[in-house]
Structure formats: C-alpha cells, structure tokens
Amino acid sequence: MPVNKNKAIFYSPIFKLTTSSKFGRQDWVYILLMIVFACAIIVHFRPDFYPKIVGGICLLAFFIGVVILPLSKFGREKNMKTQEGEMFLCREGVIINRVELKFHDIISIDLSYSDYRGKVRYRGKLDVNGMYSEGVKNIIKISTCDGQVHGYNYLLTSKNHMRRLYDFMELGFQEGKINKRLYSNYMDQIK
Image (cartoon, rainbow, N blue to C red):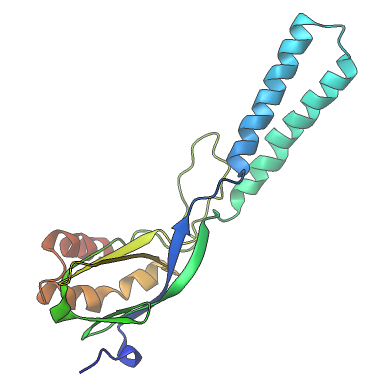
C-alpha cells in the first residue's frame, strides 16, 4: 500500500539552506567601524588633513552604524534558502520531495524541531542580523536500508506547528525509527 499524502499527519515545505558570499548587515558594521577607526587615526596623526572631510566621513559612518543599522535588527533574519519540495509525514511512512519512504524501508529518523517562524533569537552586541527567525533551521535526516540519507531543512510556522509532530513522533518511536532520547526530549518540550 503506497504512502498516502492526503492523510498526512504533518506537512511542511523543505528547503536547502546555502551560504552566500555577499555582504550582509554584519559585514557593513565592521566596515563602518574600520572607517571610523581609520578617520580617528588620520585626525590624530595629521590634524591638518582636511578636517571637515574626515569629520564628515566619521559622522556619516557613526550615524549609519549607530542609528540605521540597529533599527534593522528588528527585521527577520535572512537565510539564503531555496525551496526543494514538500515533506509529508504519514502513518505509513514519509514522502520527501516526491520520494516515498515506507517505515519498513527506513532505518532511522532524526529531526530537530526547535526553530519556528517569528522566534526571537539571541544576538550578540555587534550582531545586526534580524532578531526574528524564519523558522527553517529545523533538520530532518532519514537513513534508509539502501544506505541513502535524505536530509533537508523544513519550516515550522509556529510553536503550535511543532506540536503537530506529536502523532508522528509517537508512531516513529513505536516503529523503532525514532530513538528514545529524541522522543523523550520532544515530549518534555511540548508539555
């Protein structure tokens, strides 16, 4: 009997997270700090070197670094992500990216579930990345009998969306596909 996605216990889009070499907000903070530091050194050693221009550059860098960048902290964090497909967790098994995996074909399922959209993330003092998570840093890895490992990031839209994993975690634990530690941690977290 095929895995029926119409009777899915849990659904989520899946993503492939990538890193980008483009400058982010964090890089701009360090560049602005270097500009202010360089201007301070120039003014210290060469006070006659166009003080209005150096002062203007310092003031502009300071304004951008102290006023504009901290206000950008309140946005969402930006992950470079591309949607790969969909994930359906069902009673008979799992459908990931149109690949059906029945429970008897699966050796183990490992998943993380701590990130959800809108979750406030901790930032350090100089971290100007968004303070609200996009919710895609959850990982599911499924090891199959043929030696393949299917691993993806998936989206949790809210803390309640995480609770919808309950039936699948229960079923996966009973089938012996989810280990006791993962199951116990999940049960403790949703209480």
